[in-house]
Length: 125
Image (cartoon, rainbow, N blue to C red; front, side, top):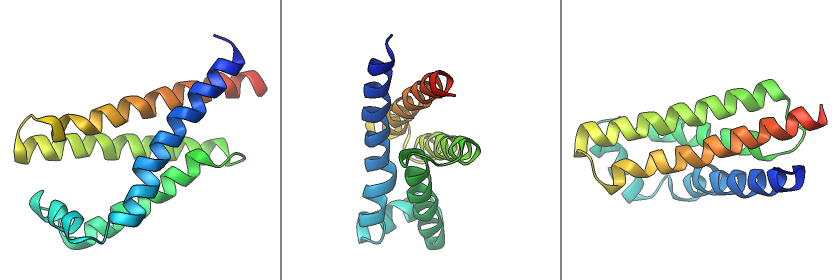
């Protein structure tokens, strides 16, 4: 795979993650639907606020060029852990369905972004 292809794949997957994990929570986290979703899973209201802050911070950290590698690594790890926890939470409460699987789909996009980032980082550093 060429460096140009890796860059395109990296940016497409990273922007998708930024939209799902950074932008959407920032704009929708305080809606009644989002609050009810957190309550439905058995979490307290403050958990939704904390989750939103971490998702937005992680989305920004993996998207902005020039962020130190160590911070970016923690952001990828945190977003990955959050998506796996979302899958487990939905599965425990609602069983296996489309809503349960969706965090794994986003996780797979995050994994592609992570792999492509490291391919590019190895090329340039």
